[in-house]
Amino acid sequence: MSQPTITKNISLGTILSLATILTSLAFAWGQFNTRMSVTEATISRLEGQVVALDDFQRLEDQIDRISPRLRQVEQRISAQDATLDRILETLVDIRARLDRRSPPSNYFPEKQ
Image (cartoon, rainbow, N blue to C red; front, side):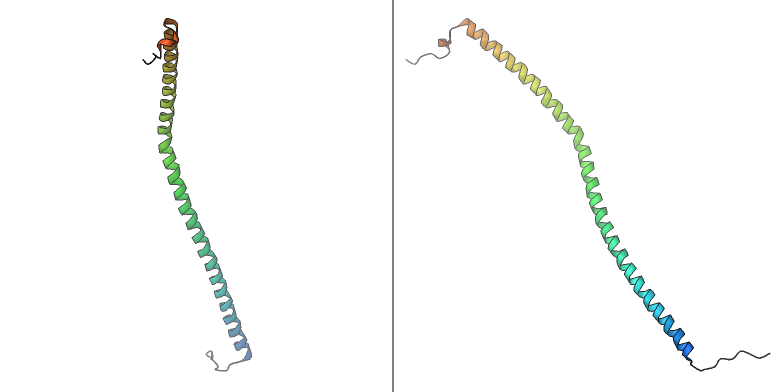
C-alpha cells in the first residue's frame, strides 16, 4: 500500500479555490458588520424607548399618588360650596328681616 503524498504544485484550481474562499469570507464579514450596525442602532433606539417608558411609568405613579388627594380636595370644595350657600341664604334672610323691621334710612345715618 502506498502512502498518500502531498505535491507542492500550485495549480489554477487551487488558486481559484483560495480566491473563492477569501471572497466568501470578505462578503460574510461585510454582512456581519452591516447586521451588527443595524443591531446596534436598534438597541440604541430601544434604550431610548426604555428611558421614555421609565419616565412614563414614573408619571403614572405620580398620578396614581395624586388622584386620592385630588378627590379629597374636590370633596372639601363641594362641602365648602354647600356651607357658603347656607351662609348666603342666612345673610339674605337676615337682611330681609332687617329690611322689614326698620326703614332703609337707618342704615346710613346722616352726618351732622
